[in-house]
Length: 435
Image (cartoon, rainbow, N blue to C red):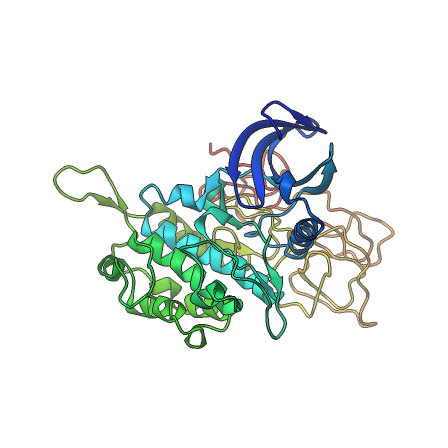
């Protein structure tokens, strides 16, 4: 047994958070790094050779799934004769959040984040098979991260697994011992239906399910049709995986909510009081002024707000953008950060990665080149805006990049920022204090 205030290596146990069929989760304090973390410790009576292999498999699966909406593993191994998996500590679970009132726009954001996480797992042929609100961990700025791949299986043509899962969120065919990627489609649709309707559909899952009237008041017919298809009892009528479901959702996302469904409701005073979503207005004005100037063509994987390929962090939620996951207009990509590179570059101009080329003996000009390299021995003295390194000699950019016609700078890194729009510096990720 692990007790409160007990030390496991550098971790001090602070609180018991949850207990499942295979393990107990504790909140602990890392005495070296000075941060709180979550420790997952398997039950001692289940520490058989097979269960240990299951936990090792969970670690391997998480190591493969590097995504902003999937909970990473900080460490895993034996500590004082206990097998411990260490995770970042969230603020709670989606299950905790659903006990309170949930705005339609927030539920829509959660839906997109959940779809992105599971779609990424399915892209790597990994089925989760235990999707439920308690396995989505909530972090700052309403960011969700999917946890617990303990019973996930590598999916090839078929997936061999038992009827494991959580009662209430398990697909019918999974309960019969025949799970597939379509099982995750069903479970995820149950969670989304619960968020918008306030009701969790039950067997025999006949459409329309309880709470359908509330669904019709908030959601567009196309979004409701999407949920109906995902909740089909016949798995052959569903989306083949969450990637296909995510793509269908993205086609209806901008009109998923009916007019007025996403407004914030104030205190009751005999009649409903609403106010405009000022964040939406702020983002729209930012795009109008700076979409072309900053080459904003992508969206943050965590909050869905617009970002540029050059940004190292999201200026709206502060999440690090170590990798660029969207398309790039340049002909090649850096294998480390996935940002676009030119064929005559020797190094990535965005990250301090290994040599990438040149991939061509030809020298390419670019009208976007602005700043001269400070290295006197560099033969190519041009750089793209907001790059961190010279792509030919790897010299770090010393003079801060500024946004044209704007003098505001980040107090931490000195690069240009837009305090009237952004909450964080997109170049260093530090919080911006408005003046």
